[in-house]
Length: 160
Length: 171
Image 1 (cartoon, one colour):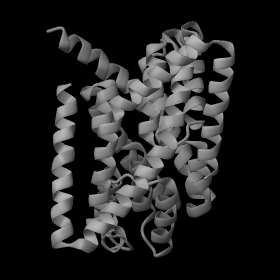
Image 2: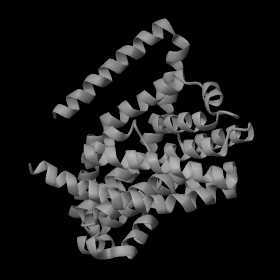
Image 3: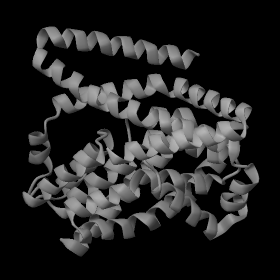
């Protein structure tokens, strides 16, 4: 992947430049990075394992049936919930959403799915709470969920 | 350290469930393994360089620069910088958390840090390009136009939430 290459390149170049300018500072930067990795590793591992379970038992056909053509407001609700729970990379989620749209799913439902998918993360909430506190994680996700529904309905009015 | 042991316990529990699944439904168990494996590869390919960059950012960018750009009195300019920084983000949301935390530590306001997280989550430039490709420019741009004001609103409200939490915790 191009993006992965870019950030490895940027990290390597930054690190080389940093070591060239100040060795102590660079070592401190590396230690800080390692400490962050330690604090995240277990939670990230738990998160991705849970995704594995959820996606294995929630096949795309079921999703299509729930938010497909003619499901109306129920479709929006299901799509928003589904988008909040799962964590899918954009390069899988957007083609999936695109195929639902072509199959005749409502614009509202697809917009709700895509928006909650990126902005609301129930599975990443524990990690978010670890960094910013439970209250922050809870409210940011709740407010994002509400916004996603409003955005979805507005898009349905404009494009539907 | 208590948190670590809870996570560790859950991890052991998951391993046990996964093992049981291999006996009851080997097909599903393999599916879980390959999905989780893919995400694991993604995490391993993206998290180390991001954390190194966050570490370097922490060590080299002076506090006053972030304070001036995104601090309490930075107003619209601060919000603009926060959105710009978020859209330049790469990788999943969890990769953005350490950088956001570091911004906060360097004096960015809570509102601007929330703007940064939301922008990273929803309007990263590579993501928009993908959305245009698969859902169409009309869909993607309208969603973008609605998302930006939503992000600003959410971030403004978060300040109120956190202000209340401070007075709460002092009780």
